[in-house]
Image (cartoon, rainbow, N blue to C red; front, side):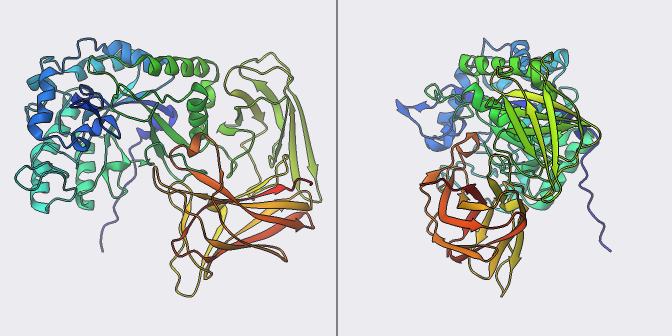
Length: 577
């Protein structure tokens, strides 16, 4: 009998779960051109300039000869991360360009041996992390290497130039043996305890090679975590896509790497900085789903973190100084769906309500516990009045909080609820006090018949393969108020920077009523989550719901040859006129 493979993460993952917020640093010799090559601005992200500008190895390697980050200050960098409320730091030790930003005795293409700087800056970072109490972690591109023979995407002037993402097994195995393993060993033996190795873009790697790397890391440092991008779902935790925000709770341990602007490595002309409000919205959205937020900075070639990055991080830190207990050590919201007023996290018998938009009165349906006390973290002396009711006919539990007229704190106000025990909540989608009912696809029953492919929810909470009438999704939900409702289908995009496809003919059944229509992506869903993964709401028209209580809904795609990327169905009280 084959031995069952144990992929249980080490017990050390507790620090990572408690952290919730970390700093990503993309830094390398690609910061020298800073997005421009031979007088031209090169499209896409800064650290990919070697590939996007189609630079030869000698051209690109020459950048190392002028890389001299004399203004690098490890203590300042780590201090910025700490003041922002971050608990760990992940820096690119080797990106896809193949250049090592640490002293690598096994390979001379590194910052000590190939640059005028000539020092191992990772030693200084390790010392600063120990001083400030942050976990030092390393990014390492284990498969893509545009410089080393055998690496995926290797530039080869003789064999066709750019670019070959898939390489032959033999040279790739040799690359893993001769470059990857020696350098990973150096990272895990030269700088003391390492929190995690952040592998990336597995492309050509096999499952056995991914497992071998995982075992290799754990052998050298048993408490060092291995990121999900080691490949084939064998990491100690999962990695969502770049800037990807799931639409609902996720199972297991996950992290989202995210940018402050639109690039990772420094580009001198990318000034599309996200606002502090947007960054905090994303932080609390992810925390409410139990997902870590790894927020990136891209330093200049001189070793300076750009001022717009620093100013935003320090303002986040000011908010965290007051409200950090709602993030650090928190777990996901006990409710399996989102709210239209904000987000929720939990810690023991305490719930945290995070409100981006202030309201003097807040109502929530579905909490079955008794609330013993409610407190505003930014104004703990203010009295918050609590009223709880229960409608026995519909089994609706409603919590009403009178918060007062003046906003408590900046950006996102936080209300702490102390309960009489661990949170007990209604698990069916509920009509909320605003009148809206949201039916997320990740809470739906998935049904396939007649040989149709099995339906599945992807890691972002989307159903992206609903194609024909043989398949359907269903929900049971609770309605408090009968009436006329407008039905909208929210369609998403499962791919970064893609387009939400429309044109599908669908039918929505609610009790004895049916709505048919062709989906048109004509109403963009605005929000911090949809910047890189857009969503659109398509109206199906109005429908009459004549009774309260538990109802049943079904959605089918009568005609969707390319599939339907379904996020949710919304029912909102119809406006008169």
